[in-house]
Amino acid sequence: MSDKSKKILVIDDSPEDIQFVMENLKDEFAILAATSGQKGLELAAKEPKPCVILLDVVMPEMDGYETCRRLKENPETKDIDVIFVSANETTEEKLAGYDAGGSDYLIKPVQPKELIQKVKLAVSNKQSREEVANDKDMAFKTAMTAMTSAGEQGIVLEFLRNSFAINNVEDLAHRLVESTSTYELNNAVQLRTDDEVVNFGSTDPLPPLEADLLTGLKDKGRIIEKDKRAIFNFGGVSALIKNMPNDDDKRGRLRDHLAILYEGAAAKLDSLNLRQQIARVVEDSHQAFQAIEVEQKAHKKSSQQIMDDMLQDLEAAFLSWGLTEDQEKVLMNVVQTGVDKSLDNFEKGLDIDEQMRSIIQRMSQFVKDAG
Image (cartoon, rainbow, N blue to C red; front, side, top):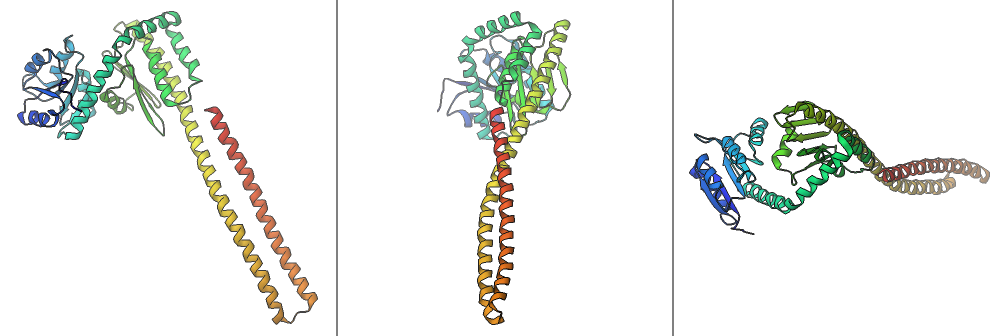
């Protein structure tokens, strides 16, 4: 559905790239274009301001990163989502875009479907932020009150105590972000298990570029710090702090508290991951035993039929062997005894299967109760 009240600003020195964007977005948005960073800064500050800025990285005089930094330094344009457009898709390039203030990244050559999807997502994210803007002051006051009453260490202890009741990865991510936010820190986390990856942040919805950075830097070290930003990696937990304090003492205290917080979260995540794997094994075992039970019933029926046929064939053969009646009885008793023993062994195997099935059911109930 089109909304021409939503304005998209394209800053690019290539007329062909500007034309490409206009052709793909003109039916749904009002499009403005600037061929230089300086002109883009002027248009971005004019009312009504654009919802999203599509910003080329490589431009003469003022490149896209510098243009974005100036946009973010201006109180009138700092809240506009910036989507960088570049032919370079390395993590370092994305990190440079993130440092400059970008919220997403498009790789050239841009596909029309991806362009539309990214722009719509940015517009939706902006609307979501505006809808919760009235609640942010209250959330900040609540966080300040909690921090004052509990203290810095109390926040960690409170999280660890509450973590015992958490039974899924999404709840763990939410609790972790909430606890970190109590320190007045703008943060995002990524939790990884064998089955899923959960991203969540204090700015919701989480910008796609932040999720990309958490994935790209998860193996780059335990704690990575640059200016106000810090990355923490503990097992399957990666966290991004975007506004670490300048004061060295406070920064050091928070770094220690956060390390304990994320280490505890990683231990809880390992527990949830193990529970997921046990649940999968139990389910697979249950299905396997169901299949075995069906096969065994069919096997028993088939074996019984084979034995019955054998006895009938044996009785028919007696006529041609010239055996006496007593000899026939002795031979039939020997064969029948063997058949009975074979069936007894088969039934004992079924008893063992029943015991295994009971064990699987108890394990399944254990996993259910633990969840």
